[in-house]
Amino acid sequence: MTGRVLVVTGASRGIGAAVARRAGATGWRVAVHYGAAADAAAAVVADIRAAGGVAEAFPAEIADAASVAGLFAAVDAALGPAGGLVNNAGIIGGKFPLMDAPPGAIERVLAVNVAGTFHASAEAARRMARRRGGSGGAIVNLSSVVSRTGGLPEETHYAASKGAIDSLTLGLARELAPDGIRVNAVRPGIIATDIHDVHGGRAFLAGFGPQIPAGRPGTPEEVAATVLWLLSEEASYVTGALFDVAGGR
Ligand code: NAD
Image (tube, rainbow, N blue to C red; front, side, top):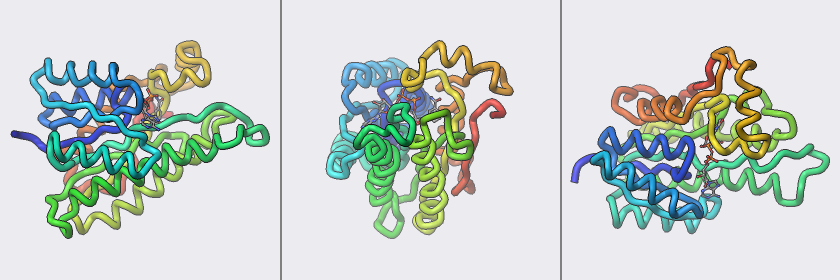
């Protein structure tokens, strides 16, 4: 068996799928995590294997600590302990004014985006930490430029969840550096994926393009390139950094 094991959460589509495919092509043994989309995850695994890589698909509810523990145990058994983690699974969680927030909606976006990132990071760190017999590793978190802009109208809950990702990235980078674990975040701008269905999908993406200095939304592959660089030894002295991949926005 060659290559270290990379867990990519929410890897059945969008940015996560692009990260998983690129990781498979660059020698990582890829754990393709998914929530419910088993067929889409299997297609990502098939793509990686067809290109000569190693991958397996694993389901878990990322907001649930026990489910995430089960995910990492299953990865241990099938591929080996994680040496890399990309905390990509996330939701916008709906579009609503604060005063009309549906019951439970704010709790849900924080549970998935923030608690889920903590749960997966803890499981990964237990396996990577030098103080626990591991050989170090790297974690990349998917934040967003909305952490510094406040977000699109009526999506403050999402922006706040990404602000928390920035803070936990800075804190965990310092906490885990003595264990040989680097922790960084990528902050995409508008990237062409299905996450935008909540506020208009393709029409939104087409309309937003002219507001971006680069003149267009980004692609999942453009985000994946930065994620894979941060996971690599090329970034061996990079930790606690927040990288905007946002076309100048
Ligand atoms: P996406 O909706 O295409 O993919 C998100 C993935 O997360 C899906 O596969 C989904 O099944 C999974 N997921 C969501 N909730 C889950 C849960 N509770 N348990 C398990 N899996 C769950 O979105 P995307 O655009 O590829 O976004 C990926 C990440 O990048 C997200 O964290 C998102 O916030 C962030 N991001 C995206 C953009 C963008 O413009 N697309 C911009 C900035 C940040």
